[in-house]
Image 1 (cartoon, rainbow, N blue to C red):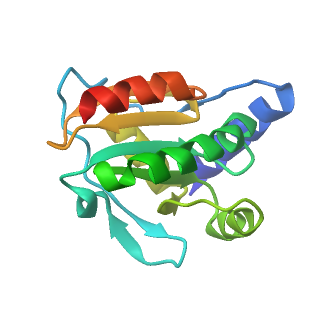
Image 2 (image 1 turned 90 degrees about the vertical axis):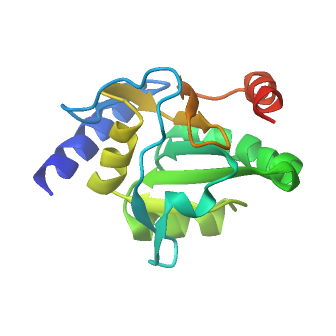
Length: 173
């Protein structure tokens, strides 16, 4: 709990300083994934508070986006992620949002700004999931592209742009 509070305070300080990406320490023990590393297995609560395992989407191309409700670049990405889910969902792509945030704050946020893909929520648990993708020091948003075979294909720190996302999705499909 103390580590999660420290991380949140660092994130808030970064936001107050006006950074376009928010840097924070994810884990001291995480190792950067090598080419074709497997995605980590983790379980976090969804917006209803029900535990959901990332493995429930095995066999799909995953776009796993780590974000926070107070992060401006994260907020700007949501329309793109919604569009990717609509455009590519039928072809086996699944966008998953992982909010490093308080559940009540995320629930309030999605009432204001609709999200059309599953959202998992956690504080320290979400930071640990992020670390499983190899992030030691990173920025929010942070997006992992995972192939159907469960191997990490690309890690993207910072705001995702449509052309880059489409190029990678086309290669993975």
